[in-house]
Length: 333
Image 1: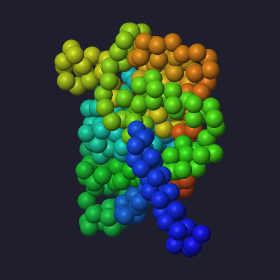
Image 2: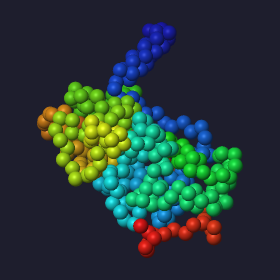
Image 3: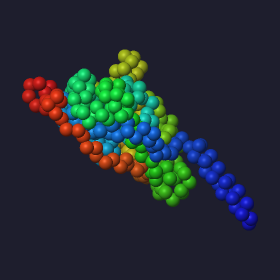
């Protein structure tokens, strides 16, 4: 075999592999490309900044813990003054792939989403004005804003822009399934391969597709049979006011799903086996065998990618001009 022929065979193989990947309903996640490192660093500081909350205790990371798959592993989050949140906290990992943010899609992007919890009385319990005043009170923060935005002015727009820039870097590439899609046939088990085929054959990919394996559309929870829950959230109806949008939620990502329990918008299900059975029943009207469930879970587990390696930022100290936290007392609510 000539050297030229060998090269041709390699090129043909690469092309065939690329065509196979393109034909799949799920796409490979690639590592984040950081083009504005100083903005990302500022956003990381603000993501871990508890002084954006009235109590001085709750940060973005409280509900989107980067040590636990970008979630808090609770049915619903704990907010200001130990109030119970209204809905399960979705993962922040790969969130930039979503068509919108929050379960009901009320925020168009990560920047808009970042502003919501700060002023929500059941979450961080602050005001946007006091949050920006708190950050602006610290010279080190003002210096960071000047470096990134050209002057020391701390605004909500800039604050949320920086947080969003950091969150866009929180992707999880190189999962076993990504390696499989890229041509490494032994990257996943035979059970996982069978589970992926089942995932396609049963029609799960009609909602769970794209690089995040979800997040590209809204769908009714309880399409074939009602989903019984005590959670009061009504999905898109809470945004649009339309009865047709009742119980229509953003399809969640399945990336890192083994890490992001409990499942569904009400956080009522703690195991993937139960989640798979529930979705097959209420969304597809089908009953899966124990073997099918096992295979499906093996596939879902293969979607866990490399977690972001985050070094904790050192935050500036408060000073006499920094608004004091109010974690307790009559003014805490």
